[in-house]
Length: 279
Ligand code: DGL
Image 1 (cartoon, protein in one colour):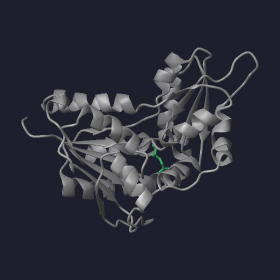
Image 2 (spheres, rainbow, N blue to C red):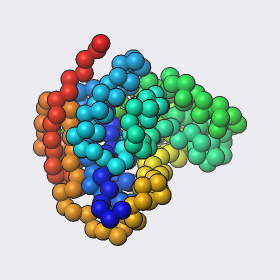
Image 3 (tube, rainbow, N blue to C red):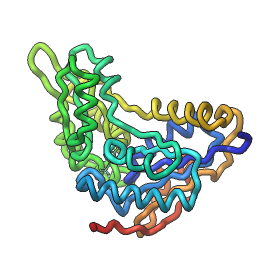
Image 4 (cartoon, rainbow, N blue to C red):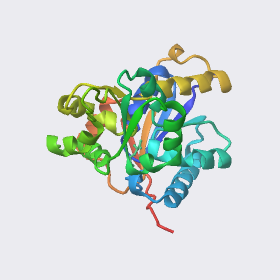
């Protein structure tokens, strides 16, 4: 395949930028669409049937508009539920983002690990199955936060985030049972690495924060080269302007967010209003 690949990176909001950054590093040759379903945000509190219908509908529109070669669902809340529906409906490769419980269980020495995620992700059968399959030798604390993804969005928009708002959300992930305490916390929502500076500074004690973004980027590159026949990513220098961000809301991003996107190589911003309708 001689042309450059087209990669669609999708999230409910800005969290998927943490995955996009790693994919873009491995595939500087690719054209990217970064799609944020801001009109559906936050996904973490949506009923499952609503979330499935929403993601399938948005994906339908994105695929007809952009015809991507590969789609990265850079959202744990969506991936842990919607991937089978997407794969059934669209004949395209989907790469999901799911809680990195397996690497955390392997890395942990104290065998006390925590999974920090949205309420939707911690409630999923998929997540509970990962715990049973890969962390049977660990005590796993699942922490569902209703606030952190919104705090991450606010942070990206340049708002001031008080430390205590963050600390309240991460504190339950730190378990101390005397002789042992949590040593690995899985960042099981792509928004959370945006707040890593707060997490590291406010953590009651140092832990490993496990972020699967690099593994997802490697998987995406593997699919492009092995399954789809694209050449290696380093060969071509990226065209400036080959990244488009698309927001499903009606409000254009403010100046601070535009600057944050620009620092990530995103200059073109498009709005495509897709209101969330509860059936
Ligand atoms: N970024 C999403 C995730 O990885 C969730 C944020 C939301 O609640 O929409 O789970």
